[in-house]
Length: 317
Image: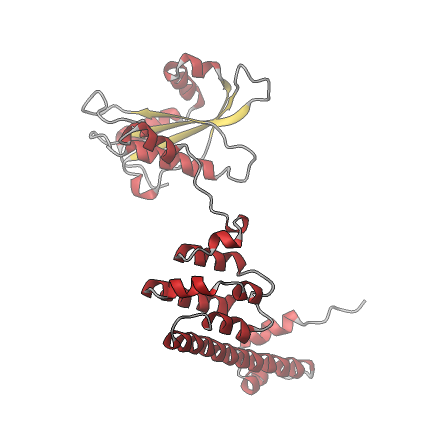
């Protein structure tokens, strides 16, 4: 964390990092209901900060770990946090409600791999002007209406799992349905059946519009580079043959040919590289000096050293 230059904050931090002072603070300011569910005997100061660097001259936080226990729940106490933020400036921050949400999200990310996220109770310590504090700290009240707040802050996101959608439901002559279909099948062992199953009416309808044809070209390149097929040329021809115009079919096949040529060139380069590796290994096994191997193969000394380590024979016992 950056050096703290605000004298008010420095004083507060020196005080609140002492557990006895922190307990006194929480006993004074926590609501009775909350105090009844928290075991202050378990207070433990935590290192680090959730405040991002850009705001460290505005806010400083003190974090204590503590056990939470629901009186109606007989399960073991759950470890959580008492998160205290001090407002540095004499002028309050109008975005504090959003900042708090951001800081708490950073804390929760540290527990993302656990079965349950920890509860966090936040306190904002403010001693500036004007008073009373002029801005809401309830993020829900920053929205125009409660419904917007609910689905933004509490509602789960809409999940679109294309693997759960039938092919026929995706192939309805709209761009989003088409690219969803392509994403669904890109990991198929062989994409030829999926491409062959594309209805000609859908392809023609989509390709009639400039953005539709653009979408098809992007998907065509995507499949040419990343999809698998036992018959790649036939697979891509089956899409091109369904296009409405000869110009579109020719453009698609040109794209496919360019990508295939690029793939051949990459394959040739890879083959030459593997050949140089083999020569280098043979020379090393014959006891050749690494600098001589470098002159012959064109490999760097680092590459030659890595090859020697990778293929080194284990010592005989």
